[in-house]
Image 1 (tube, rainbow, N blue to C red):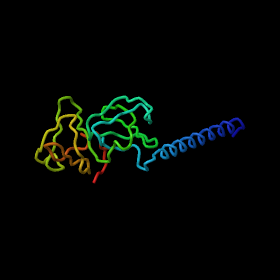
Image 2 (image 1 turned 120 degrees about the horizontal axis):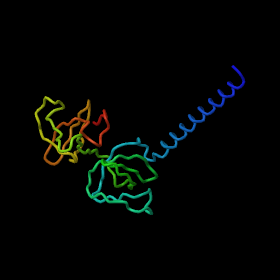
Image 3 (image 1 turned 60 degrees about the horizontal axis):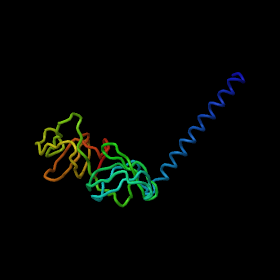
Image 4 (image 1 turned 30 degrees about the vertical axis):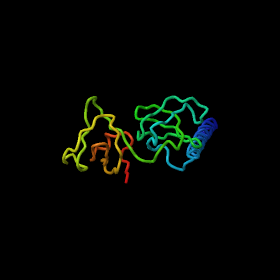
Length: 176
């Protein structure tokens, strides 16, 4: 190998090691920001029927909007001290004080085709009896998820739904 190629190889190797080091440092920094010690991202729900969502993680930041329904699922995407950056089912993001969030799992029924319904079965099987048909946007309490199915309940319904029809539960996530 010529001196020129050795020099290029050494520069390339140094750049790669540097990039790996930066990536590792960034990952360590992100996990260190998880002040709760819980995984990020994760789903939670709104504890209160009045939740201020702010532009940043302090009370000095403006209120961007207010949620007025307890139980809505949100995804925590970051933590800063006692503040949590959240994303809702429509993709809106902002910062919420931790005490306004609950570990209680809920989910929103989603649809691929507008006007479609999600079928709720009496057991985790498409051969089961139809227990209900749910519209997009219905909020459910998540009781249990396994093998691509979730046992959910809500006002006037209780049954099993395909996990892919829910926003608020990760694909293949198991919930006991």
